[in-house]
Image 1 (tube, rainbow, N blue to C red):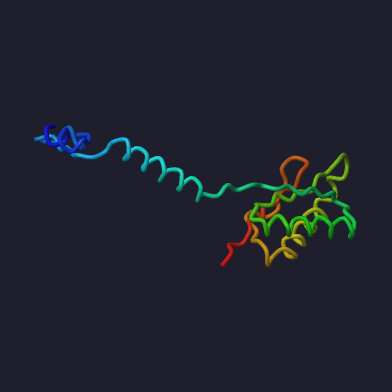
Image 2 (image 1 turned 90 degrees about the vertical axis):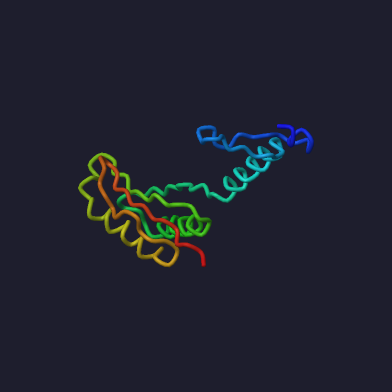
Length: 137
């Protein structure tokens, strides 16, 4: 403790259970500051994944499909995940095969921008498919 006082630093107990206890002479406030700074850098480096949704009907026509495909392409280029789904209203549930064909066509068109994470699955009145962006080199 005398050595720490002479150097105007703090005596920090590292391992209290050791025999004898392990201590270190350091500037404790600077240590805490550096630790917070490291945590902040790690947090800044971690990426937040956003999920963008695109909704289709079972009988989506060509122009609407192309418009939505371009938006999906833009989302994948930004690095967002894509949730594409076909929503069946009323009796349109009888067109399940058309919805699946539509989603698989979208997956094929977006093949160079992202990879399919989950193939089309029917959940209630929605057929859902997830596409994740490809990693940039």
